Length: 128
Image 1 (spheres, rainbow, N blue to C red):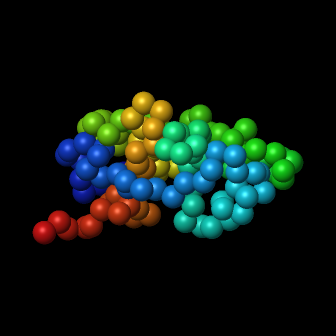
Image 2: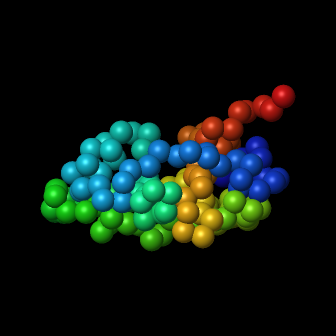
């Protein structure tokens, strides 16, 4: 993985308003959201408080159950002041290409790598 930006902090490269779903979303609703090819992780929140992240739902899960029961604890969580270089090192150990950015228990952003592995999602290729 080689990205064009390794300087600065996570706050410089994160998506500040990532798409979220309510922490009370059902398994059926989560499955529907995960059907979209661009969706790699569902960020579940209660207000701005982070509840968990879901990357997949087991086939036999009850459609009316809470998706939060299937939160993925292996995702990388960083703070906004984490150096980008450190965050990228931690991300290399994971295949999702996503990092959750928290301040305390509050969701403040998401870091994701574009499909080319060279750029961060939402960050222009050249800053002018």
